[in-house]
Length: 351
Length: 122
Image 1: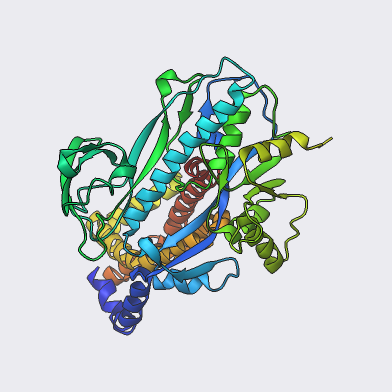
Image 2: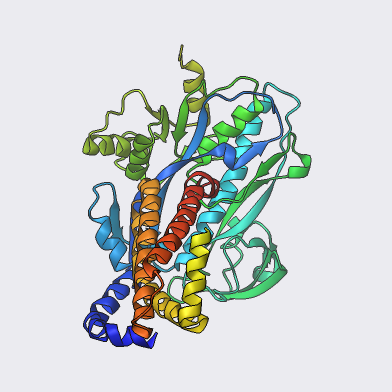
């Protein structure tokens, strides 16, 4: 070791500052986000249904993911500008106050609840023609957002279940939509939550400026697996976010019905799924279109809800295609509901 | 293989295990210092240009092979600095060593491309 150090010492002295500078730009985060093309992931690898096991599925149904980098390093930011496919901007809104870990927690909460929504919608659709299929689910209100002024910020985690709160005149409020109605007389109220460790309560105080507690609650429907048939298995996932909902629904539905709705095609797409079967908007449309194009998919479903809205995903996708010289005809399919996607596949003639 | 083991035996007898390990640790530390920003940079390039993942894994295999070469070059240099009049054919010994390690890195890289990455990206 000493021999090498003696030998290299003149070079070490010369290179130490550039070396430290390079390491600095490799580790120092900046308050931006980058969206970059990612890949497609077959839904079958994530969810499997114990039904129609001998059915031969010729094509594939995949969700599309992008690389969403929150607070990239200087280096990531610099190299991202070399590609026209990437998009970088300043982090704004509530995400600006969240740490990267918290953004990941939200993303995985979204993913987990999206899978349950996909299963519910797909099972309900398949059950219309098959009485064997049973789906049961329950309601759960969970913590979905936190403002920086939330009391006991660290104690209350994303995904914790809201049980009830004690409102004015000691009223027990279980309906989260009624919280504002029963929290008029005072500033501090006791909220009850539940997580893996058990039940807990915290006294939450309203912010003096906004007059709000700083907590966002959202109602989810989760599958009651004991009362659902056929059983399904959900594997752990490294891809977060709810944007695979529509494709997850299509894939689960395909596992439940006798016919192969893929018709041998490579199907991908994006869009969240709502419990009524409608499709919701997603972010990173341009990068998802590029990802689909690179992966040579045959069909790509994209939410199309309002042609007058500039940020409608389909309108964004058309602009992205124009920008990158991609021909959208024949593979880019606008849909508003799960039924639209199903109808498109059923009407396809691939002979 | 026999020739390879004999060369190791010769080297051990000539400059002792302690000196070989000391020279290795020196070159390993310097290679580590060199490779740290390289791998950080590659990881960040991958995150931004993820759609070229397979290409990056191939690049990582090449970079690891190059770093392996640098490690052996500095190891050899450290051994000669300890004992300039070494008779053992270190060049040949380290060449065998590098080939063996490069094959191992290649197998690991291919496993990542065909097995681990498809499993991970669910």
